[in-house]
Length: 566
Image (tube, rainbow, N blue to C red; front, side):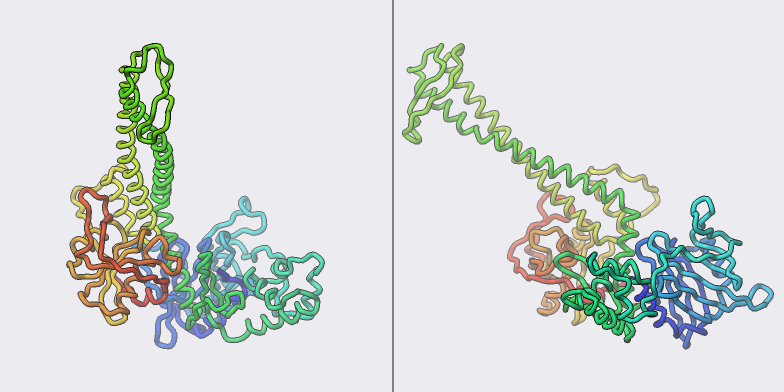
C-alpha cells in the first residue's frame, strides 16, 4: 500500500469542499479511529481519522460504524471543543503525512475559539492531537512524556512540537534538473536514494520513477522525475492492483506502469480506501479476538500432519507381513526336511519357482518356527489394519482443521465463538462456560443477490454449512464447493438458475475457499439430492456425485455489489 505524502496531498485536495462545513457530530467507534460527521451542501459526510499502526489515514467513508454506548474520554474532549464548529481549513504540512484541520467553534459561554486537529501519520507512531490557537496541546491520543520520548512531549498543557524530521526535500520545490545533485550514480540503488532524499516519497513512487527509463543516468533521471511528478499533479485516477501470483495488493491515486494492466479503477479516493481497508480492518479485529484460536488450529494441523507422516512410515514396516506368511507356509510344507538345530533351510518358493533361504531358531522345533512366522504375520496384519484406521482418522482431522483454517480467513468477529463452540463439541477444546439462561443465537447465512436477482446463500462455518446443505436448501437447489479444496458450501435458492447465476455462485464458492486469492479455481456443482452427509462425519463434511466443474477467478468488487446486509 502507499498512503504516502503524495497520496496525502491528493486526499487533502479532494477534501477541500468540506471547508466551511459544520462539524455535526464526533464519534470514536474504535480505539484508534475518530469519525467527524461534517454537514456540508445539505449532506452529512463521515470524515475518518485513523491512527491504526497499519491503517492510519484520513478519508471520507461510507462505511457504517457501531458506536460505543459510553464514549471514550478522548472522544468527549473532541466533542467539547469541536462539535458545532466550522472547518476553516484542511491543509497538508509540506509534502509530509501530517494534516491539520483548523476549526472555529464556540466555548461554553459563547465566545469564539479556534482549535486545530493535527493528524500525524507515522505507522505505529501515528498520533491525533488537539491544540488551541497558541499551539498549546489540549489533548493527544498518545501521550509522550519527557521520560519516554527525548525529542518532544505530547501532554495536555505543553506546547506542540512537530515530530523530528530527516530534513528531506519537498519534491514540488525543485525541478528534475536539480534532482541529480542529490544522487550518486556510482552507488546505484537510485530508487532508494530518491526515497532517502525526498519528503513524502514511498518505494512505490520511487520505483515508478526508475522504471520509466531503461537506465538511470544524469540525463534520464531528470526526465523520468519530471514525467512522474507531472502525472502526480494531474487529476487523480484511484487504482487498486492485485498480483494473483504473489497475492500482493497495492493502491494509489494514479496509474503506474509497474501495475501493467492488472488493475481496477475507482470513482474516488474514498471509495478506493473503503474497498482496500474494509476487509483488512475486519481481519485485524478478528485477528485480535481470535489470535489464540488461529494458533490453536495451526498447532493442531502441525500435530496431525506430523502424526500422519509417522503413521505412514510405520505402515511401511507392515509390508513385511506377506513375507512372514510365506515363510510360515514354506516351513510347514517342508517340515519333513527340517530338523531341530537347523539354523536355516533352503526351499522352493512354489509361487515363483525360485529357491529361498529362511532363517530358523535352532533351539525351536520346525512347527514352532512355522508358528513364529504365522504370529509375525498376524501381528503385522492387525497393526496394518489399525494403521489404516488411524491414517484415515488423521487425514480426516487434517481436512477438518484445514477447513477451520480457511473459515478463520473469512469470519467476522461475531462468528468467532461459533467456531470455538464447535471445536469444544468435537472434543478438541474445553467447553466455554455459558449462562444457562442464554439462548443460542439463530444461525444467519450470508446472503448474496445474483445479477438477475436470484438469492445465493453462503455458509461461513461448519454449522452454517450443515444447516444450509441439510436443512435450508431443498433437493433441487444447486450446491457448490471447491474441488478438493477446503471451502464454504454455496447454494442457489432457485431450481432453474441462469448460466450467469451459476457462474456467480461458483465465483462465491471460489472466493470463500482456501484458494480464494488464486485464479482458475475448480468449483464442483450438483443438485442437493446428490449431496450426502456420511453417518458420524464431522461438521461440514459431505460427499457428492453427478457433479460438473467450473473454473473461476473471484472478482472481489463484483462480490461486494452482490452482498446483502444481514
